Image (cartoon, rainbow, N blue to C red):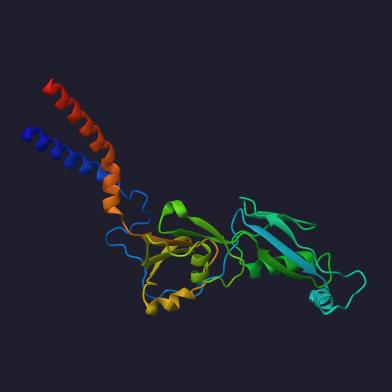
Length: 255
């Protein structure tokens, strides 16, 4: 019986060890050896303006006479034939082209908001006198992983000055499992994503709370590894099977 117990314990320990490779397998964005996230020279605002991408949704308003109608409308002055400019949404195709009224297809992919406005002003100047155009990307968002990949949230950016703290707050804050000392922001710069790591666990990290996020940023709050809980969860079915087998063996032995 002693031999059986030792064999059982050894088997359980071995199976637990082998099964532990699946523990915390939902953890993401682990840093490879020799490759570390940027912890200094963290930009408090985007280094470059957002560039329009495929599948973006954009809207624009057009007013003639360099926006005279907008000012008159806001001030209560009514001008015949001039009202508040309408705003409609348009989707940028995979090709980077957006189809707009009157001017037709316009290549906007890769443009900044300012460049897009300048381009549309030139195009609509052929039909309207001194057009004033304002462009807005309506589907800008950041993706926040607050400590567990299963709790990921897409946070719409309602304005261009949304801070890191605001984005985390809209995603529900830092959960119990999340590490406030290890928050990674992944931003696409120059065609590749750069990873910035910040520590919000100390008062010195308050400066990073006001960091301006940008559309398509990823914010990842690194979770604490729940090793003990994972081992128990992985081992429970195995222990149950072995316990049942041991009971059956004992019963047959005593017959």
